[in-house]
Length: 318
Image 1 (cartoon, helix red, strand yellow):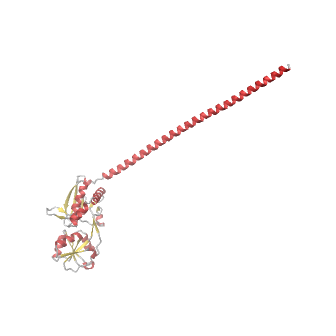
Image 2 (cartoon, rainbow, N blue to C red):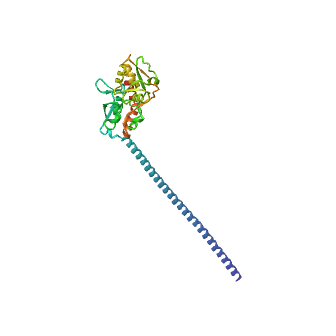
Image 3 (cartoon, rainbow, N blue to C red):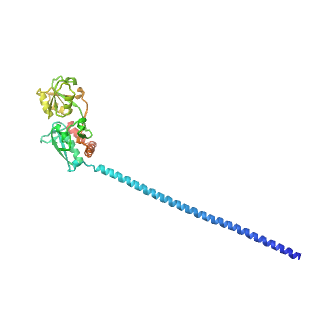
């Protein structure tokens, strides 16, 4: 009996040990499975997160690209509109395809009447070149210098006539960029003792009506007796005939008259009389920004392509 009882105790002990071992193995297997499941879950989560991040990044990049594309398109459209507006800026005065120009053809070499009775000269050739750039026909009206400013915007579209830019004129018209620098000269008879500003005081002075010479003789010369002419040549004729003591007129016509009446008159540079440099420009209607822009652009192109220099050689330096 004792042997049997001993055997049974050993058997039960072995059985319990086996059960405990199986339990331990099961527990370990369960933990590994959980860990495996957890690992799989983590991997899946990471993959999902990566996919989500990629998708979000792709979507963000796509949105950024769309936004950038839209912005670029908007900028391009805005630039095109600006260029189109500038390119399409045309003065209403040119709607009929004709540029009507006023001048005073009594001011050689800038404007004069040629052998065919037509206005010619540097200014006339210049405005015709501008008209060609603008793609319009140019019609030149010869009129008195004094009436040019008042006629702009009604009888004529613009005026070019060796016209000096002054504050007084700018109250009535706008001026293009300057195209020529000039200075007044004094024409005197051969043998005259007039040689300085002080010598002009109290003298009989001939001028072309409404010109810078008129303003100087009237406003700056003390005690002057001013005779005004519509034509510069008429003033010079009266100088030769002793009706005036001198004539104040721009440099280039002064040199022309000195050559025409060689031996009878001489032209004295304005620097001796302290005359300042002045600018010639094209007068356009006050407030017509389109006309001003078109004229300036054409003038710039003419200077850039050499046409301006060719006209200077042909009419002024000839």
